[in-house]
Length: 396
Image 1 (cartoon, helix red, strand yellow):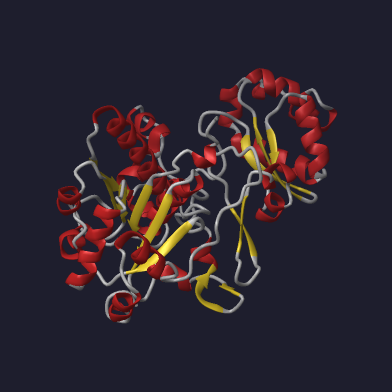
Image 2: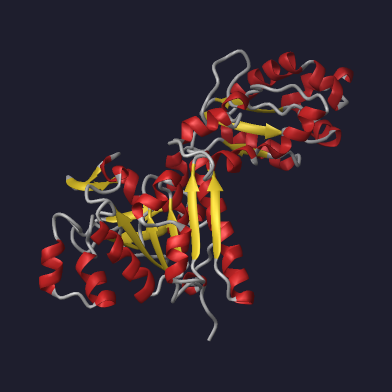
């Protein structure tokens, strides 16, 4: 029987001491593929549980948490207490755990009993992944805006002569989560061939600097650095332009495309010798863009897109999130999760490459410590009396 994509990791267990966004996004992607993901939280819970908009007024179930934590289980453990660490070690051994993930500060690995050395001594072929701002050599806290600033992303984002800007999404967090996921896939492949486990250290800063792939070499060849708005430094015109009812982005990639565009009556006033070659358009980009803005603003988005499409010019409406959420082509790829307690159903982003052959659903994001008794009973054979004794101080 053919394995469906959403069952690819069925039978794999991921134990993750995670919070915020970067590592939860990584393990969300594994949950979408069918892995059992048990997230460990401090007794007070992941701070993101209290950020955004609440689920039906419920505490510790806010929107910022819900988006990347569906398909998981939640247990609470006080890893500052030796007994909490012992429970963690028991879980690693007795489940047994295939992959351990964390985005705790590296200086806390030993203190919390989660270091690679400790966990691999319990399960030698464990895949251990630690994600932090700067890697194990520098144990400093970091948030997405700090990393974007340090990695040069802010200086490259925004309009010339204006303040540096963050990207519209937390790209450093998400890219670090993607690279952690990718590295874990490599480690699974290695373990399948050799039987050996792996230690993976992911630096948010290094992941984000790696996104400068089109900048670093060009910089060495003398390309100017800094903010360039929506323009492309090498091709013109590439920019966003206002229409009567929104915005479009047009990307002319060569002289042939330009000739086709200006053959249209609406653009004929741009059909001048100085603009035949790309270098001429780049040289006069300010005036060219201003004229294009005037032309575009006199047209409806739909009409402008039609002209460009008929001329073979790459063009797109600048979509809003509302547009995405009402686009049947996008909605069909989204994931749904329904809460059996409240009946509330949420829409979740798709895995970048996942393809389901049936309805895309996943279990609802867990309440704080929702699976304490289930996990401790099922895997450690703890009695209800033992669990009762552990409450408040050890498991909340």
